[in-house]
Image (cartoon, rainbow, N blue to C red; front, side, top):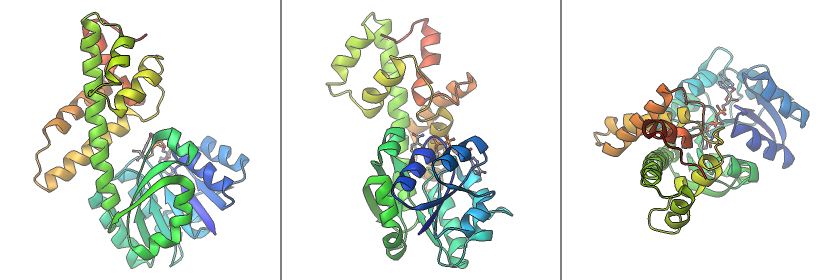
Length: 295
Ligand code: NAD
């Protein structure tokens, strides 16, 4: 079984390495030559384009930043659709919108290709350890074909329903992450301004009803260490909040907190923090008050 992997960035690289270690033949493509070479050194083949990658593969996985890039990689002149043989199964593991996935799945079907949305949660740690949670949308028959590969990447594989339903769960999860992260930043800034040691705030609240993943993971591993390399970049979190806001608009669902959280991340982007981890959303709040939440 030949696997193609396109988008070997923060998440894609450790995922692709796990596929190689599981013994699959792997062909990779990325616009970053450095990213490709790192995988080639571990035994992967290089494809010059998504088209070439798809031509050589039975299953093609994409792990790319957003709708526009996934669309270009699928539909571009040298894209996946131009190279994939009928019967090939495409798995998009990027976080994209359900409406976009439905359109891509329709095009894939017309070309005799299987299409599955399988976004993930669990961060770089989960990608590295092969313990991701994977939210899968698609037809049972396609999912049965690719399940052994998904099992290399994740420990909790949920077949949610028809194509795009994995994306729907993912955007709901990630709007919560965005709101929680913004709330944790605001709360820790206030607590520090009130003269409480950040470590004391962490010790008490991480064992209390105010706890969350954003608090228990991001405060000690990023904020306290003053290390803000992603992780999960602010630009990607902003994009996920946009997916939620746009999708909600299409369904006439008001999203009060999600819109406010998105503006808080917009403020961080305006400060030039888009490439930093989502925990860096605390920096403009600290700057405003002239304090730092460090230990
Ligand atoms: P990333 O920016 O680190 O990686 C994206 C990769 O895609 C890069 O290597 C980039 O060079 C490549 N790329 C961009 N355009 C390309 C193109 N046209 N052709 C080929 N390759 C191209 O992003 P990431 O953090 O790995 O996230 C990828 C996806 O997974 C996003 O949709 C993100 O929202 C989602 N996600 C990220 C995390 C996380 O913790 N980082 C967790 C869960 C889900």
